[in-house]
Structure formats: C-alpha cells, structure tokens
Image 1 (tube, rainbow, N blue to C red):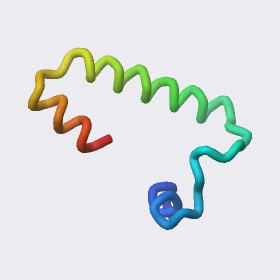
Image 2 (cartoon, rainbow, N blue to C red):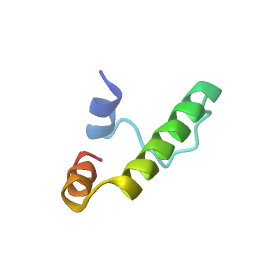
Image 3 (cartoon, rainbow, N blue to C red):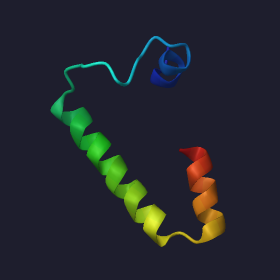
Image 4 (cartoon, rainbow, N blue to C red):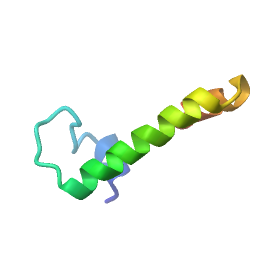
Length: 54
C-alpha cells in the first residue's frame, strides 16, 4: 500500500512521534522550501491550483 493509501485509510497518523530518517527530513525540508517558493511566486489562479493539490 502506498503512503497516501495508508494515510487515507487511517493507518498512518502524522501527529504520532516517529523516528524519521535524515533522508526523509531532507525531503520534507526540500518540499517545504519549494512550496514556500511557489506560494510566493505564483499568480492567484495558479496559487489556487497549488492549494488544491496540497
């Protein structure tokens, strides 16, 4: 099952304390940085699409 499916079916709780690998921490930081960049640089219509995706 994919992570999204696990999350959808309630098998994963994002607020639980878990040990996260350094690789996953770097990935999450990279995603946050890209989302912040896009949020500040997209126009209104494009920003609405990004919000729907997220």
